[in-house]
Structure formats: structure tokens, C-alpha cells
Image 1 (tube, rainbow, N blue to C red):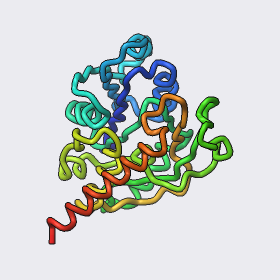
Image 2 (image 1 turned 30 degrees about the horizontal axis):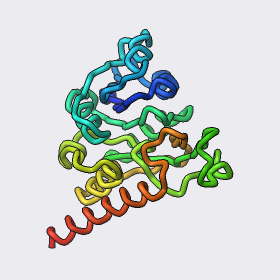
Image 3 (image 1 turned 135 degrees about the vertical axis):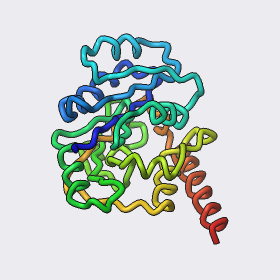
Length: 226
């Protein structure tokens, strides 16, 4: 039987990008799949934009606990799929991404996940840190955007750390690896990470702080396991 898939999209005040994110994923999903949008207290038109999408596969829920980790945890709690993908509201999938990842996963039944390459897009107004030259380039990093996970792996690992304002996704990937994640590789571009004026991690000092926090927690976990 073909496994079903849930795409989890956390969002807060993302009316300018959420429609594009959903539109990039919907055509790549099967009829039994779903997109779970978790509104995290938006005060703009985000909810109206999502509700205007006439597709029964799109579900909208509300989460009052602040932060992307809490929103992702809420989405995962209601997700029905055998497979799970995470998509931030301001990022988007590339054409053929899902088929490529699912094939890589099917070709390696022992794999817990599959991942592809990440591209960067720099929006006007986000170039205060010299980012324009990186527009369209291959990002030298891996984020949850380019993965598809088997639900069993996520259940085995547990929820994301909601105490982390920044870096909870990096921390979670480290925890997945510590839980024994085996990942198949899709040799293709899987998603686009968008940099813009509203990114929570746009400030490089804050991004470094989030990365340092995630790495520190990973080191502490490794020491505790010895």
C-alpha cells in the first residue's frame, strides 16, 4: 500500500508567502495526502489566505503556544501521514522534489528518511548582509525543508524542544541522527530557502546563537549517553 504523507507548515503573520508555499506542495501530493497549516497567532491575513485555498487536503489549526517548535509539534500531533515533511511558510518546494524523495525512500526500505539539495533565494530588502550574490545558489547546509521522514522515526525521537526560540530545527536534526536515522539521498534540488526582511533568523548574530545553542545541547546529550 502506498504510504500517505503529511506536510506540516507552521506560520505566524505569513500572508505574503504562505500561498506560494502551499501551491508548491499541493500539485506534488496524492489525493490521500494532506497539508497541515499551524497558525501561531497571526494578526495579518494569513488565516484568510489559507481558508481561501479550495482544496480539502489543506487543514488549518491554531496553536497558542509561541514559537516554531510548538507549532511543528502541534502539527505533528494531528498529522495522519505515514511520511512527514516540514515546510516553513516562506520557503517552497521545487518541481519534482517529492517524487524524487519518495523514490529514494522506496528504493531503500531500511532508510528512515530521504533528503535532497537546498537552494537559496534572496528577496529584495534582505541584502543588508551582502546576500544578493547568493541568490539561486546551492546552500551549503541541510535543513528539514529538504527531507521527508518516516513517521516512525519522529515518534521514536519525540517532540521538538519548545524552549528554543532559534535553532530548534537544527537541534531536532541532531536528535534524529542520534536516534539512529538512516537517510537515503535524492540527487536533485528539493527546496528553496528564502531570505527576506521578515526572517526570524535573518540576523546573523541571532542565527549563530541559535546554531550554538543547538550544538551545545547535542554535545550535552552525547555526554549523557556515555
